[in-house]
Image (cartoon, rainbow, N blue to C red; front, side, top):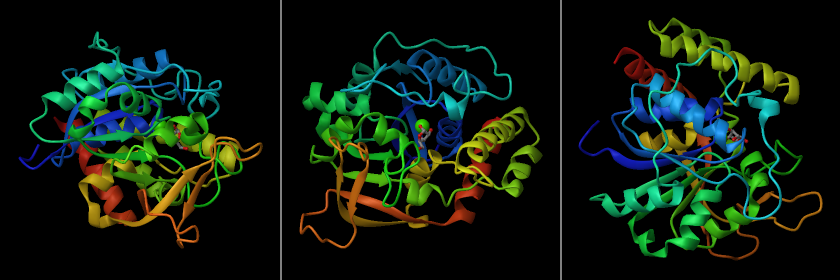
Length: 315
Ligand code: RIB
Ligand code: CA
């Protein structure tokens, strides 16, 4: 880890792409992973938490604290993503048994303690339903000055995935995203319009598989399962690996072009609940409340992800 590494807390719902995001954070010298917090989303909270512990074990990072968070949204009921990620939430290759356990503090308390204890402000990276981050904002305003920014994978400047107009994470808890977008904190949105550029093509999966260690093999097999789901549900030729894009944006900011825009999230729409309305052309005349990622340097993304996987696997 470099002396200028960005300290982050990764709030996630592993989930195949969350798992790659965790390994990217562990393997990049530009990131200091202070902690992981878990949420419902791709699977139940319990499964997401077990999966996070297994991925950290795989990554040789059992020292990273894991705080268990929300089992459901602020309002409404959870619709889980097992239809994409499988019964376990991380189906495909067998995983090592967790060699670590959850921190006795829950997600919000762990986030607050890590924020308070850091010498420099900390970036919150959310790659699942953003419920835990909203709870931190609501319950712990005292620590918010320690937040450098919030980077979330979610929403879209275009159409959705879980529903025709709503991306899964924002669909899962639109009220939570509304809390985040109105908190006055620096926010970067990494939506489907960006992450659909991050396709794990056969060449990418082959490069993962060619890495000379278990991490490369497991990552390639995760892509196999994830890819089969994306082919079955959305007819993709290759799966978009969403969540690492949020971490990558911190590693190589110049490789992710962003624009400032006003972003709103629909909470009352009959057919559009969870949709993000991104005012790219300032039609509503409202001040921007987010940076919105719009263009990915795909070659840099995959070379960075593969390099990080090799660091973790070869450690
Ligand atoms: O829509 C993609 C997002 O939903 C990703 O974070 C994926 O892991 C799922 O949580
Ligand atoms: Ca996720």
